[in-house]
Image 1 (spheres, helix red, strand yellow):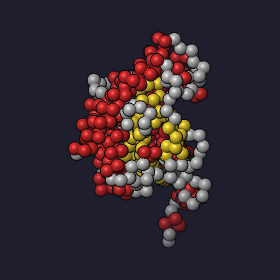
Image 2 (tube, helix red, strand yellow):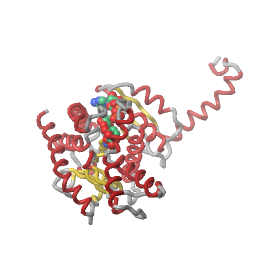
Image 3 (cartoon, rainbow, N blue to C red):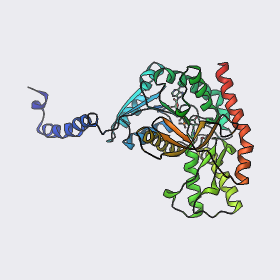
Image 4 (cartoon, protein in one colour):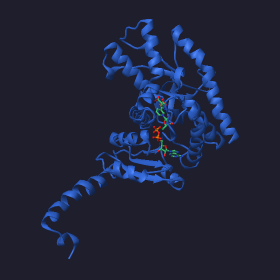
Length: 349
Ligand SMILES: NC(=O)C1=CN([C@@H]2O[C@H](COP(=O)(O)OP(=O)(O)OC[C@H]3O[C@@H](n4cnc5c(N)ncnc54)[C@H](O)[C@@H]3O)[C@@H](O)[C@H]2O)C=CC1
Ligand SMILES: O=C([O-])CC(=O)C(=O)O
């Protein structure tokens, strides 16, 4: 007698429903031609950012295969997220020996791996630990998915992006259009703080943030915000709040880490926009930290168009106010030094 025939009436009634809910929808998800196809890998997926960002990526319905990698706990995170009833399969991979499989053939790799700040620390204080983590990930990406778009969240972004780029360069697989430092949390904060201050609709707010991702290297272009009416004092205060928004969270968390939930939102949003570009959506424009010659710094964030092969146009910035121009001039040397520190690290390790 088969297992189903032996089962109690209750189980026999329940079985067809379960197979409809799980078996049939899963089969349809991966046979239809209009379904999401891309593979997105998250490296550092079991961390504070990684878990919530992976959940948001799964819920986006834009991803065919969400591949979660961490050195710990990924099987549990993947099993948990895989039960969400949205498009796409989820796999979990743990430890160095599974990293190649996790990354193999990925279209996008989002990287929130590494330690976060505690009160009293700068992002640069994370360099010693996170530089080697990011370098190791870049080495594996060079082998397993050299053509992917790499979205770097790990801090200090102003150094980890150059590190990642130098490893790709050393391995002969660097494509500047596909290496992006994730600065979308700065844009998220700028939109929120400006909308609150001006009583404007945050869902329609647009603010460009250029420069880098640490303290005063974060340069919001508030003079260009449409519909806003700022005094000079407002601009100074809001600029400062956007530049040091990360510190607000670090202090409030009081030793338990830095921004994770807002970063998860910002990271999932940005990865979704990169996916849109890869899939041919037109006019996808977001700020991101890329290799460019806008200033003397090797990497600089500005609005970029995201297309079928990553960044298709770097828009840069025009007509800055004297206040904004002074911020650029004052911070380019810092960006040069932070990039140099990353490059020296790759050379010497
Ligand atoms: N770009 C940005 O705007 C932001 C960047 N961050 C940065 O993101 C990073 C992660 O922050 P949290 O998620 O809060 O930290 P977390 O400590 O909660 O998670 C980090 C995860 O990385 C994993 N990890 C460590 N080494 C790894 C490796 N070699 N391969 C794969 N995974 C590895 C850890 O096991 C852990 O699960 C930090 O460096 C933080 O400063 C945080 C907020 C905003
Ligand atoms: O402040 C931190 O260390 C984390 C971060 O980059 C941010 O929240 O902007």
